[in-house]
Image (cartoon, rainbow, N blue to C red):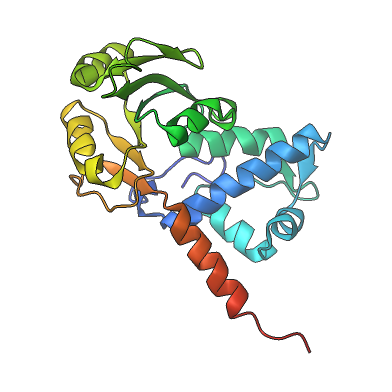
Length: 223
């Protein structure tokens, strides 16, 4: 990395950075945005670590994967670090997103304002229900699934959300890949088989609750 400007250096591809580090970048970004909203111009690794339950060394190590962002005697300038992390994450630009499935979950996702706050906007939705097709929900048009490739190309869509039942998820994912989508956020409780060139993230809320119940059941008894 070029430590002065936070740019990748030859032989140090950011793709080699562990996913856990990238996940923590998103957490740092949220806390920095909260700090700015609260009127803070600067912060430091100790404060960020305390807010998120990490050590200050972990914060510094994570950020060091991408450059040197701190200033002696100052720490981190919040706005500057926000801009740097957004550039690293690719959210310093606008991302139109396709969503397939307009059931209860799909409608809830359309109402979620957090997407827009971070540079994402659901630009088109798709469904197989004839009663939904042609309608506009939360300002987004509902298209038939057989127009997927056409709409994805017309709107420059590279990311998509799958919010359909598990039995339909793989077929939908295959259609998204064929349409040129490069990243899939999957809410269906099934593991998708996708080409290596397509990035994917799975969100299974039941699994998250299982992890939470495990933590509670296995919590050491208070002395």
